[in-house]
Image 1 (tube, helix red, strand yellow):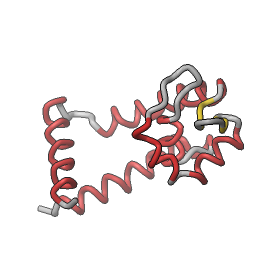
Image 2: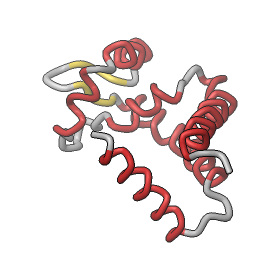
Image 3: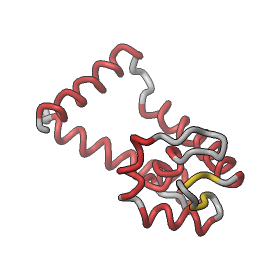
Length: 124
């Protein structure tokens, strides 16, 4: 049996490849999706917990601003085009998640996530 570190890295590698296959044609990377997915729409309340993450994602934010998907103000937020892109890309990502979790029940998925979360916490 291979150790958990092998499987964590292999899953990450395969998720990255699947993102590229599904979204690469649209010029969207997995990291850009992650940023796009947490940006507030103009009517949304800003998630202050995401501020440190977003401040470390300046280059990704620049790309989203350049595309017209986000705008900078007091906070960075989605534009209407960005909201539409997030919805469209989100549908693709939902399909990817469903493929990755195929055959895994909710309880097993929750155990896997909680186990990884605990291992991370143990190493903090």
